[in-house]
Image (cartoon, rainbow, N blue to C red; front, side, top):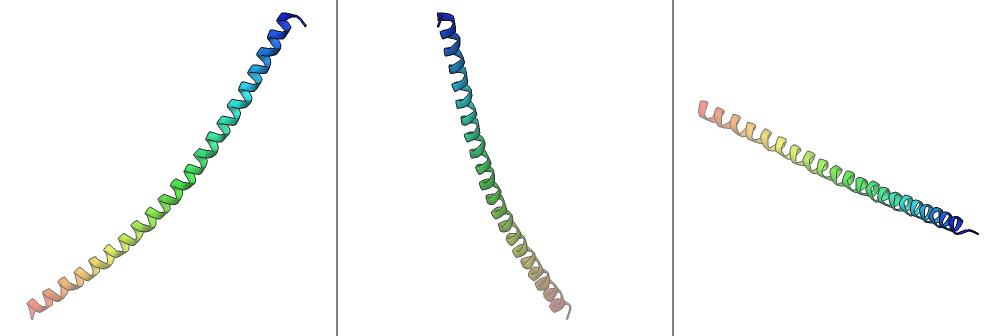
Length: 78
């Protein structure tokens, strides 16, 4: 085998191994990013539940305040 053939073969093998390694790393990174997306979605859902709970509490407190204000107006008017 000539020297040029050996060099071409070596470069081809090197490029092939580099390509396989790059694809493998890229797939690993993509998988990690997808998992992070799932975690973020779960955290977002938890925050949404907390926000809805807080909103409901706020609505309840607002209703109680309005009732109290109405009672105060009635007691002043009587």
